[in-house]
Figure 1 (cartoon, one colour):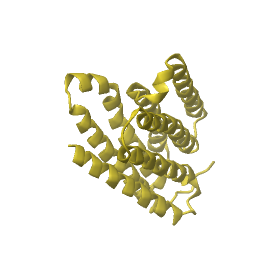
Figure 2: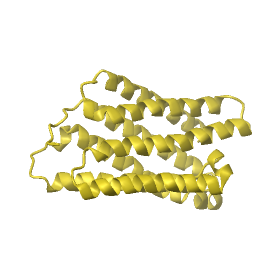
Figure 3: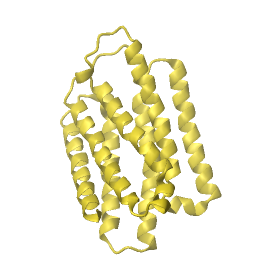
Length: 222
């Protein structure tokens, strides 16, 4: 299982790099700039994680990986929210997105302050909360699409494809993170299966980004 996880992680990193190359070749898609930045930061984050896996393991190495993970979560929700914010039209939904963002940042700040060592450790519940807060705006966008009178080819709509990719990955990761400790202690070794499935879903997320960059961006009224 360890070998399978390593292979999947490397394949996922390759998928992220390919997605970034495709995004560079389609710089004309201005609405996907937040996604391009997300891909770029994902390359940096995953490279750091792979380096910490390769070098000798000690407490400092583990701390670097966890710090990178926690910092990346803030970049992640910021960039994905920025993308979704400008795809969503209803002011009520936009206000909720701002509230959700402030809620997550505040939650992280309080958690890391009250438990200082938590910033240097893996906190799956925080990532579960992040996933939940990212999934909700995805439903906002899809709701507006379904309620819209505008004729849209969803199969080739880049914004819709990106949103579906985000919804797919984070909706599946939510139960994984919230049940992490229970499964870890009650089913030893099952965490490796969770890591493997999460890496596969993460790779599919970037495949959806590739698909989006190869599609047309619909013209929308601002």
